[in-house]
Amino acid sequence: MINLDKAAVVVVAEEANTAVEALISAYVAHLRFSAEAIEGIRKSGLPISKRRRLIGQLLRVQMAAADWLKHTEAAISTLHVIHRHSNQAEVDIGCAAPWGNQFFTTGEISKFETHDQ
Image (cartoon, rainbow, N blue to C red):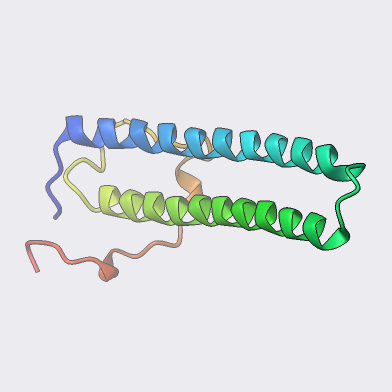
């Protein structure tokens, strides 16, 4: 069994939620920035190669942000699996993310070492 401190579990769960919200807020802000930047150069007279370059750069940032969310989701899933196999599994702290516990149903504890193995 994995031994976790209840207070730490609650703090980590809340921080996971905060991190996801911050990533999504940053993503939305960047989408707005991208739209304004593209609209700003639309009638600028810049050659198509410069426009394409800017759009490509903005798109790469958006894809990186989507990857950050994907990796954050994977980390939260791992934490959820660890929590389920800990001494705090029965503590009613809920899931930090709005999608609830049913979201992380495929994780396996066998991928992680515990002290009692």
